[in-house]
Amino acid sequence: MPVRSVCVFCGASIGANPAYRAAAVALGEAIARRGLRLVYGGGAVGLMGVVADAAMAAGGEVVGIIPQSLLDAEVGHKGLSRLEVVDGMHARKARMAELSDAFIALPGGLGTLEELFEVWTWGQLGYHAKPLGLLDVNGFYTKLGDFLDHIVEEGFVRPQHRAMLLLEQQADALLDGMEQFVAPVVPKWVDKAPD
Image 1: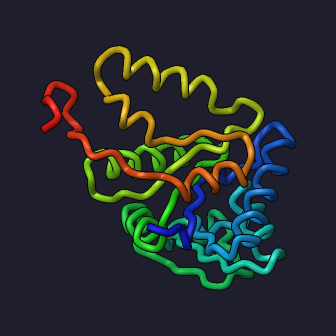
Image 2 (image 1 turned 60 degrees about the horizontal axis):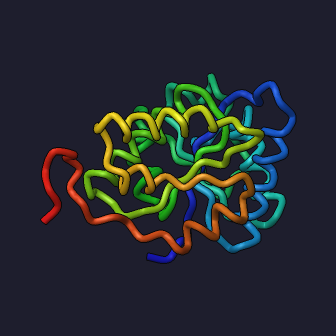
């Protein structure tokens, strides 16, 4: 399936390292330069605002999805191509997934990880065959990658499902990898033998 729309999960904070902001700018610009639509959480603050501003400034289409309850708290972005206000977090994630052909996590906190793991689980269960990846800025996701390898070694995740999560240090390399992605066709259950 061709990638036309990329969902970006990222922090509503800017983070401690200036490299995170620079990576968000580079990703927003790369998405726009390729003529892809950016879908994200709709906020104007933190890395969320940075990636959206960069894509908009580069002439891209940006769609934000934000719950009414967070619209004021996160200062919903007013300069997007479109801002959709939804009823809650479940509706937000479902709508972002519906509008997107691929998913990328920039550095972020608990919400970023929760969104990433939920969409990854959906892929593992075969609910979608969309690529997902981590933009590993300054080694931000290195320890997470080590832990994910550990849960494979311990028999809780199949290697094929672990390999679904692409990891790159540069935006263009990650987007290139997503264009080549082929979803694995193996059962989720580790103890069940493949057919």
